[in-house]
Structure formats: structure tokens, C-alpha cells
Length: 481
Image (tube, rainbow, N blue to C red; front, side):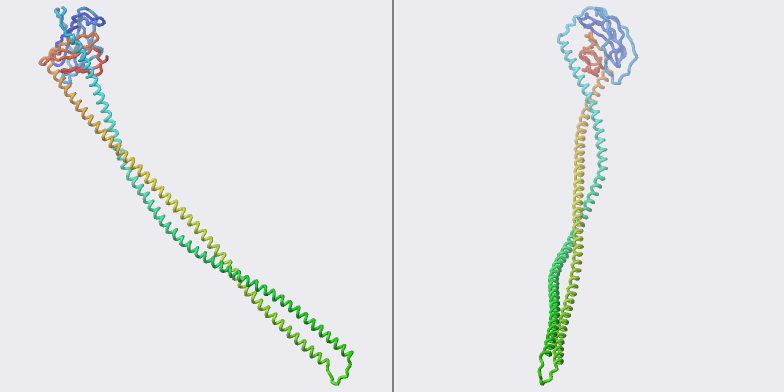
């Protein structure tokens, strides 16, 4: 156990102190030598050093592995280094019976663990504050980004509205074209119905004409048959006339031969004088007259029949020609009407296909517009939800930041107040050192004008700064085990 005495030369900081070892080192521990040692200051912000003197002798030791101390909070500025000579009290070389309570070490160990826990919590709070500040900056950046994106979306919204308006106009135009095409289709259907009626009428007329043609053909056939019969009759009559002529000539010749024979053979004595030549001439004249009349009648009847047949043939031929012309005209008209009907059917099918295609295109455009509108509404709703979530997170982070800022400000005010009180009213300080590994016991700080402050032992090598305040020995940084 060693006892350290120190005198503060100024109110602002410790200049130097000395220590004397009162007992020998324990096994496995190093002891502090009695030779004066000018070393590096253990406290940051304090100038000066300390020396050590060992009763039992040993090697010379300096401060902890790393420097530690407390901040003065900017109340007092650094003082120029001033080394004071170390004076050794001989009475201190005698062994002392300190009558130390054995539970003190346990209490100090508990206090040390509490200080470690507080230092760890404080470091964790600092890391959490830094992390929350980073998250705050990140959320502010995200908020700015989403605000800018919302502005961009608000700038794009009129474009989409204009596009939707254009699509609606196109849909209205398509509907108007559909109505117009429907009216044209109705008109074409009416025209087609008219052509169908005309076609049916022409078909009926054609059937009537065909019936008339059949009747006329029958009449022509009958006339031709009658003509053939008449020609056969004329030929038969001609043959009969020739036969009768030959017969009459033969009879005349026979009669003449009989008459010549009779005149030769019969010789009668007739009192009357008969002129046979006159009688024969008269009979011959009568027969000739009969034959001439018969021939004239036959020729006149034949001529009349021939003229009548010729007139009938001419009349029926003219009728047949007119009928053929009418049939040809009807065929041409039927072909023209058929072509017009086919053209009307093609136009009707094209118009129906165009109407169906226009309806499909309009429906597809409307569906596309509805899908895009739904996507835009979904994206807008999602953006609003994301914005609401970000705003809630930002509010939570801001609330956490506000609480942490208040806590940090409270700690800062406490630390600044304690440092200011320490810098303003610090008296003589007695520090007990009981470590050969560089640990320092911050205990029994006798501050002039204030009550004693009980500290704790930091036996582990320190790797940071030590913050000393009333009732608190905290570390700025982690302690190495």
C-alpha cells in the first residue's frame, strides 16, 4: 500500500506530487521506486509530473500505459510547466498500521465495476447519438429526395392528365366514327335491301320473261310445225295438182284417142250434123278452165298461206329477237346487280371489320389508359404511404433526437458545472495508489472548501481520458481489461 500526498500549487491544476511506498511489493506485483522521477503528466490539461520513492527498493515506474485526466471545460487555461523538488518525510518510512477495513477492496471493486458500466453506457449513448445523427441526416436526405420526387411527380401529373385527355378525345372520336360508320352501315344496308328488292323484282321479271319465252318458243314451235305441215300440204297439193294435170292430160289424150278411134270405126249416118271438133274444143276449154281455176285457187291459197306463214314467222322472229334482247339485257342487269351486291357485301364486310377494329383499338386504348391510370394512382398512393411512413419515422427520430439532445445538454451542463466547481474550488488532494500495473485510486479527494469526495479504483490500464467530477469518476473512452 502506498500513500500519495500532493499539494495543488494553483487553483486551476496540479503542478506536481510525490509518493512514498510504505510496504513492500506483493508477489507478482511491481513496486514504485523511491528515486525521484520526472515523467509525463497523467492528466490531460494538467502540466507537471509526479515522482515516486520506494522503501524496499525496486525498479522505476512511470504513469499508466496511456495518459488520462479530466477536462477543465475551458475555465482555466494551461499553465507553464513547473517542477517542484520532492521532500521525503522520514517518519513516513516507518510501517503504519492503517487498520483498513477488509470490505473496502470489495466496495472499491464494485465501484470500479459501476464506473466501467457507466463509462460503457456513456460511450454507448455517444455512439447512439452519433448513429441517430447519421440516421437523422439520412432521413433528411431521403425526405428531401422524396420531396423533390414528389415535385417531379406533380410536374409529371399534368402530362399524364393531358395524355389521358388525349386518349379520351381519341376514344370520343372513335365513338363518333363508330356512330358515323354505324349510320353509313345502316344506309348501306338500306341500299342493299333496295338492291335486293330490285334483284328479286328482276328475278321475278326474268322468271316471267322466261315463262313468256317458253310460251313463245312453244308458239314458234307450233308455228314451225304448222309451217312444216303447210309446206307438206303445199307439196302434197303440188303433187296432187301435177297428178291431176297428168291425169287430165291422160284423160284428154285417151278421149282424143277414143274420139279418133270412134271417128275411124263408127260411121253412122246421122241426120244431125254434129261438130265433134267444136264439142271436143268446148270440153277441152271447160277442162282447161276448170284446171286453170283450180290451179289459180291452189296457187292463190298457197300464196296466201305462204304470206301468212312468212308474216307469222317474221312476227315471231321479231318477238323472239326482242325477247332475246330483253333476256340479254336482263342477264346484263342481273350481272351488274350481282356485282353491285358483291361490292356492297365487300364494303359492308370491310366496314364491319373497320368498326370491329376501331372498337378493339378503342377498347385497348381505354384499357391501357385505365391500367396506366391505375398504376399512377397506385404509385401515387404508395408514394403517399411511403411519405407518411417516412414522416412518422422522421417524427420518431426527431422525438428521439430531441430527447437525446435534452439528455446530452443535461450531461453537458452537469459536466461543465462540475468541472467549473472543481476548477474554482479545488484544495489539497490526497490520492491513495495501490497498483503496480498503472492503476490509480481516485479516493478521498480533499477539496478545500467542500466535502471529501469518495472515488473508486481503476486497476486496469486506461486507454482514454478520465473525467473527474463530484461523486463521479468517468472515462472518456473504453477501459482495456
